[in-house]
Length: 293
Image 1 (cartoon, one colour):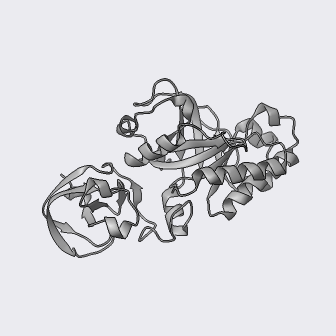
Image 2 (tube, helix red, strand yellow):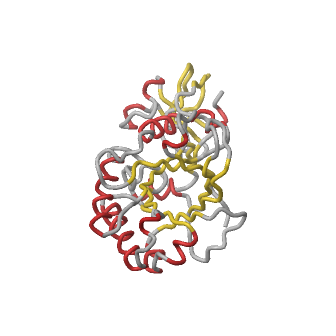
Image 3 (cartoon, one colour):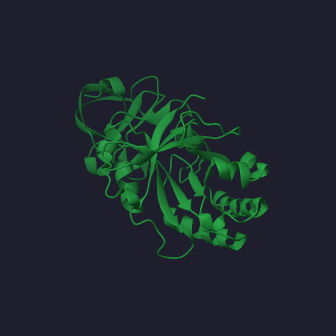
């Protein structure tokens, strides 16, 4: 399979991340730990900052929850807690259920599968695209085929080439990667699906349905949000797919969200408007990437 995006997954254990440097190192997406367990106070203390700063620097994001659930009831409570942590946010990548804790290892395959289904079912019902994170041993020994066929899989196998025989959308291939902006080792990932298009086209993970005019050619761009753009009689388009410009603009504008759609970027008239909703109120229009100076 050919990787479409390269990324990392992080939590509070990576400390205060310099997301500008992460972006400059070529990272395109980040899976952020939102929390663990089912009780208030088990939020990842870096989640809010990581979400804000990753988005600010044009990095596509997903979120994950580390599970300690031993029963279906525990899993349902974990799902409710996770949903409270991610409420009001938008994720271009999946929200994932991380099941791997040693305290769960003695549970049967059926018990583990029921736990996964309980968490994922509740989260999916709330409008999210859910993935299941597990390592090779767990996938082969603890998770049923019905679960692996039903849900997207985020495979953890630290190897040059994965040996897992099933389907998967993401692969965590090392825990000892290095990237700018993070001190120490980092989990590194590859994504093989065009998740941002899936979310926008289907109105999942906090996006309204059809948030992009088309499901083609949407990617994390080279220009981060709030970057200044000098325009000089530059063609301005009303959408990413308009054939003719609606106007021409001169002066200083700013990249709105850092997302490249069909070779164009949204711009806004003030850096303070970048990433603000609603889009229609805060975006001036689209300009071609080739016209950005």
